[in-house]
Image 1 (cartoon, helix red, strand yellow):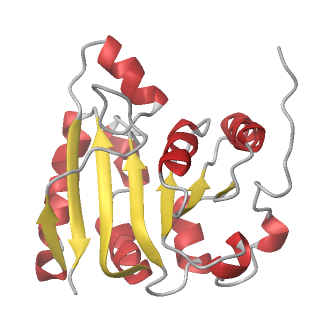
Image 2 (cartoon, one colour; image 1 turned 135 degrees about the vertical axis):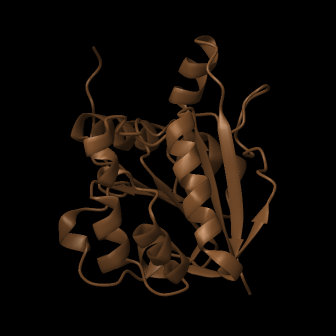
Image 3 (cartoon, helix red, strand yellow; image 1 turned 180 degrees about the vertical axis):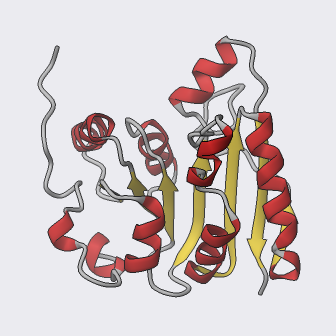
Length: 207
């Protein structure tokens, strides 16, 4: 197995997470900021960053082994418009993302926590969506995909509860996705091979 390398210019360390982040300082330039929650091994981030070099991409991944793979993958590609951090997503939004500083949130195949007693751990809930809307610029976008029908039903219910604070829009295929894909993540490819259906939703923060 090849060595997993660390790239300081890719990883956003806990020492750098001091209060609300200034994305211009983090990326060294102005530009739209897209946040992916649950980046896994970084497949979506790499493909999307290559397809949209003018966009700044920030990923969050909690599982350390996947986070390390993502740092290594992004670093090997030499992409300067991607950073990734290991953090709890809800806490990260609350403590480190300034009001109206994100242009898009990507949430693809999040852990569905299928057991009822674990449903409270699901990221897509009313409290977290309130926080997401705080972080988004007016007109900012949320893109979501899941293979879990039960979780998708909850997502639909929460989205409806956001009322006139959002506008439902059509889910648009990711620029970095390959033919036949919607987003181009490892999970999407795995589930497609297993014949699972993918459910998607998207909305904009009202202007």
